[in-house]
Image (tube, rainbow, N blue to C red; front, side):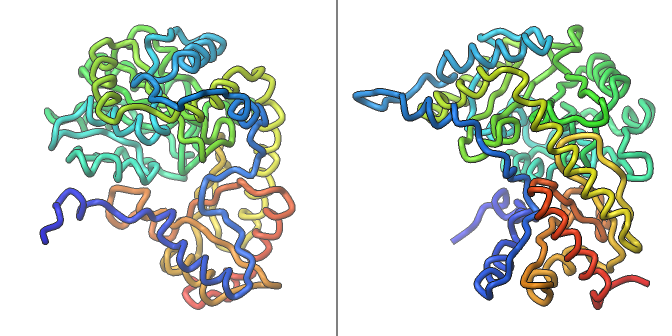
Length: 398
């Protein structure tokens, strides 16, 4: 039987494809320290579970296709608390931020059209675009200058008659970059002048360090008709399994199209929406200790990486990821070797190779993404193991 070109064009997740090797390591009795995936170990606020337990239905029926209205109201209030002018009617609930990103691409692009994305980027952007035949075109950034965006002239040189949108995360995944207010304004100006959408993935908004803040595209009031905001409870509230996200826009045509897509898949899950409303109703002070915890973990990670011979790693400003350039011939081979051939005192480390976070061939071959989502003691042990592994790896570069 024939398999569609669209499905064949999709990549296996570079984050998850090493899972079978990790599972085999665990069967051998090896403890695997997971630095490969953004699954926080921060406790999900109990209000989520309490709200679900307290829900009382005779029939668990379909919800509205645009989402449970009390949750949409709470998300709008959350935006207003942080100074963004969104209202309930600007919000539609999705099955995770992933569905919101897919919808944004469907709304912005016809098959064969392009989206400009700073690379390295969240690798699933490629997986979201591929089934709809949208093309990702990279804006290359480099660790030497903290993955900052290039100047306007460079970015505009990449725009063609097929370009329909920018898509980017801020704070960023996988590099942890926090774009400056000037960079956000620059993209807003280009989008306005060149008639482009901005698909603004802001799911790590609260996690900025060293006194930094993330400038939201939702604060660019002169281009709100061009902004499609993506949000999620997954990382913000350590509720990845809830699979509740949202798409938000002031553009009525965008929201009309999004509702049609929502109707085509019926609705998001009711109980998870009830729990998520309780999360969005939390006091904003909830984030302060979480942010301080991640910042401390980041400092432990970066200090350890920078102390390893041959490793290059710039300090990230946000999210909970860093990219490390390793003294190895191939980072994916090294990541597999860690799981199949190495352990120290009964433990090993799982990393995410970064090559497939780039669109440009040949980039990121010796880089890994490290997620500082473990408690401090486990993180320190993982760094001890990684340092020892690099010292004896057969494919180490001199």
